[in-house]
Length: 398
Image 1 (cartoon, rainbow, N blue to C red):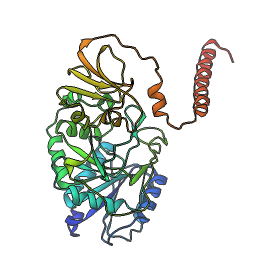
Image 2: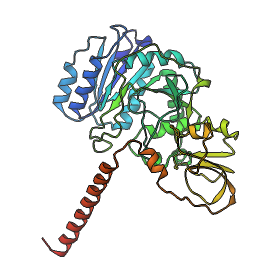
Image 3: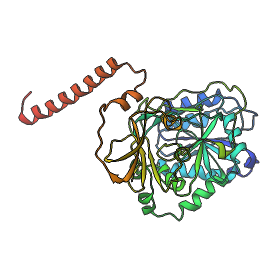
Image 4: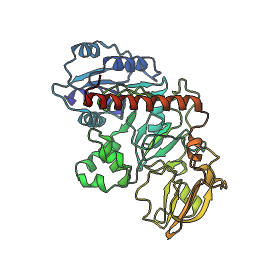
């Protein structure tokens, strides 16, 4: 990419939009349509369309012909295949020439208010040393365990999370520069040694694996909105087949100026999406207790205390019910029950749960159980049919 083209247009005080594509023409058209319908404070908004090499001449022609009435349009089409990881890292490097860059992959769709939101959070938190970047996407799922996620509300329009956004993210140059300085010196074994979900460590095409390692090891966070300004169609592509699992409710109209509390007053979630306020509630430090509300934190037995939904053979110091949402509110409000446990891991003790489906029922709120049963029957039936066909084929039976 020839970066010299960005130096001549007084771009240093502008927040650029970067659309990242490869070979999904329909998805890119959908993203561009949503961008063209969005609200902008001026007609001086740079749009960069960066396309990895695919040989799709129809897509190349489309991006060259796009009309962008809100500012300067730049088009970059790679001559050789970069791959998604190198492509995103290259786009992040463009933050050097702008106040900040918003990176949008071609399976996204933006809210009309996405740009207003981005400007507000940049202005509110650009000087913070613990902020690694800004998310435009508001997750409704803990993707590492496949369970619903709802952040605790405290009056702010944003919260902090050690979750690296890839479905609409923004970086200032100062933020990106710190990451790249770390990236040039990191070692692969740093990833394996980092206390984060094991799925991340197994990714081989994701740039975010490195950013997760950076965020966790340097105690940094991303700003996340409670209302989402992007949603994800998860079109079939580099990471697999299409899905609706990460479609979220999209904020269509800006209601007012954002309420952005000072960073010390924001709700914080760790890389496992556990609320860090629980350390204060339990009156225990991070060195004393492991918080494991989603039953996926490892290692969970290296500290004296463990707060989890798992049934384990340690002494139960205190237990809580599953009534409030989000889940951590049951501990904050001290709801009695037998569903969440605070263990002393230094004392062995046999424990049993009488009802193994409390947690399942809690997360299936409002879901029609009959539909779920029919779906489960359909999945099992198909698997049985596939297995039988394989057996019949081996036996020569038609």
